[in-house]
Length: 299
Ligand code: ATP
Image (cartoon, rainbow, N blue to C red; front, top):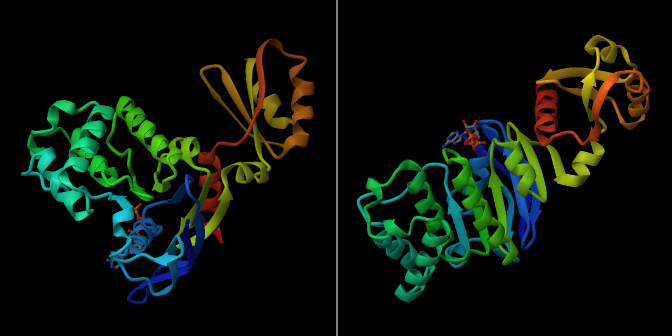
């Protein structure tokens, strides 16, 4: 288990991370979220030991993370850091060697991962000759070559097409099922929603929301009602407890203050024609994120 306890980081006088606390268990996926400059990369660097923390402690399975534990960790950085003059195989030998793998282990694991990401044919190609997306696949492969027990993924899907995102997702889920603890950052809330068991949202290094994804959604009182039918947007907006109504291609999204308001909307809906849909939905993580980050700026 990864434990981050009371971690603070100053760059000179600037506080980049402010008293951060969270834990990631075996086989759990944890989301570290925040807008640009929130302190995500700084946190990742402190976890991997690339950067000293100013205060607090970071342990993995009870031990401090140092030279002895780095073989258990995989890190996909936001900046690409491949040796592009090398072939994929040469890069794997170099990187795998650093992680304590022998040549057989490297070859076997590399073949498996190349196959999984559907780029078998590039094994002996120079990295600089690959497309950006394929270079990203190679970088991802390097970060999981050693079957890490702790995997850190900084914006893993940026620049990938939907097909390749699926391939990445499958591998991430495979690692999770094998017990790897995974922390990941993304600006795409749909990806976070799909993956994360728990998360923290940072604003200027401070935690503004933290917890299990399901609990966060349950505690967020606002809900959405999705309606299809001949409704009048202005009538909907007049209903007590309705915060906002938006329309997209004939589907209306009615944001309500809490579950008690469903009845008020339902009463109106029974009078309209051509009703084909009436569903009460949890708020999306995107909505929660925008509201929580927005609130913290207003304070
Ligand atoms: P992004 O989503 O843009 O990658 P982030 O959440 O990863 O952002 P960090 O890169 O951790 O944010 O930066 C947090 C804060 O620390 C920012 O205000 C940034 O300007 C500052 N910072 C980051 N690295 C340094 C550094 N080497 N020296 C001084 N300040 C830094």
